[in-house]
Image (tube, rainbow, N blue to C red):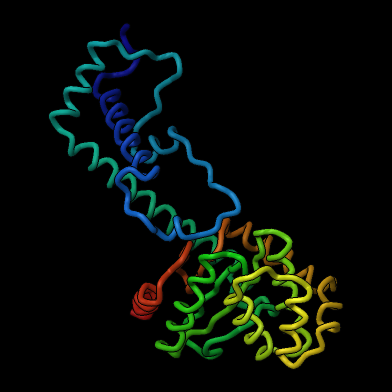
Length: 286
């Protein structure tokens, strides 16, 4: 069957499709590196991606559903790719480079459009150096295993740098126990201030069991607060409003998992070690 497109254009599309196949296999765990930040994040929803969109990123047109590639032409494409396999990997590299640049531009636009809500919402806890020249924002969930892994890394980074402001965004996405813990932390802040919140946050993120009313009441007592008084605040409308504002902000920023970090103009999704945070800070200051 004769195709209603030029051979050159179709070869480009077929090579792009082959490259996309390699990319998909890599993403599925074939030869891609493990433990990327996206792998080390508890997600609330997967982001959609389509073959046509990926082909468009590579500058190729998707084949119409009605087009059938004849055997002779298919063999020509196959032969070319076998003789020039590097073309596939060049296409994958180009796709990844374009995708990274596109994501960075989108992230910058999202941060700019939501700047005040990210960095100056008036209700989130501020730690580290409040007068630091850089600000690190973390969306976290107390039940998130990667958030627990990130806690000592963030703490180490703040201690080593000494000039970074930390903002914690309570973002419970893992069920009722997560929300219970976040409500408790916010209630402690409202009742006893920033120092008490910092102690509560540290205890909650390092705790390995379930967050229950009894456990939280005991923690409140350890913090020098009345457990019954703190628990009585958990369903306060002001706390509900804070959590809802955090969720709406996360939605606008396309934050779909925890931990997620923003350092000034840089979006860092997933677990990030202290040395990577330090490198980002150094680049931002240059």
